[in-house]
Image (cartoon, rainbow, N blue to C red; front, top):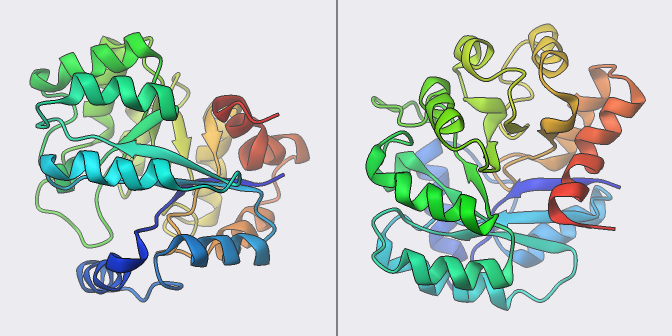
Length: 262
């Protein structure tokens, strides 16, 4: 089994605009249109059993409509990380709805303009911890480098220490382009890393060292599709020569446990 914990899709009616914005912002060419149909077609090509669609509300007023769309997706192969924004005034009620529909949320500090360790966000983390919901954080820099990085490994470590019962997933292996800080502050800790925007952005030898240095039960396969081709990352993982058991944990076993997939 293969589970991609980190993908993106938009409703068909806005997918063209979303593609235009993504390609312009990141200076990339997407693998395909950012739609559910495209995602499912590439899952079929690459023999991926399940994918998680991670949604970001760039503005507080987008939260409810994005989640309405996410919760309308009707395919057993697709799971979702719901949208939430720290500045959304109705987050307590929305968390109740999220809890009944799925298992967690996605936060993108760069787009949502907040620092992950800002104490103003702590009540949100407290409630998510209380409700047993997971948080997938964008971590580190962006493909198009930012002047201010709001989710550094050091800041994520502060959140980890303050909320020990919160299930945290740090995308991009703990901090895109902050690999030394990942080693210093997060490696080996009780925090999940996903592999999106990791393979190919760090030398092969260092990638393997980082994987072996972290907890085997805290690594999740993720790609950031359609920004990154799923086949490319699957091939990269193959060439690292990891132990078969560890590879199975990364590709599916850890995510199966999190997502409660039989």
